[in-house]
Image (cartoon, rainbow, N blue to C red; front, side, top):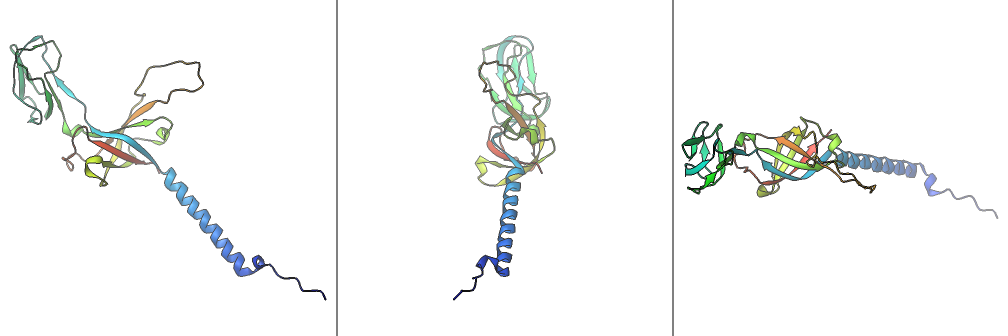
Length: 211
């Protein structure tokens, strides 16, 4: 006796509908994962930093006295040291970082006696390899960053500057097919007035949102 053909379970309408839903869900999940991975660039090698302002004599002389010490806040025009008959003054307001307080030492022209920074110029400064998303970065893009001293707390800023040339601007030729990867500097501006707790040299990590 001939037995009736058994209908495959996969031909059932409810099974086909469920399978379709699962496939669509997997596609959507994959798209979301891809978007989350492709919508930002991470820069782990970062720190809070400001340009150093060096104050030294215009002419060589013997250091007579230093009027400030590291950690002092100075105003524009405030005397900070005297070398020979020359009084050295701060050109801008700022924070003293280092001093060479050794009276009697001879300082040549331009050699710094006092080094300071302008805290309003503090930035999150990061280094990124050229093949790790540099081409996706643009001035003005939003950034979130963490500072190691403050754990997982997140802060925000905007890309302020991307260096036009690599940190190593030298050109090296080699017979090898493998070329050296260049590094570029990215600077991020944040609200310095809102975060006076950030200090020059603190380690940080940043995430740049590119979409």
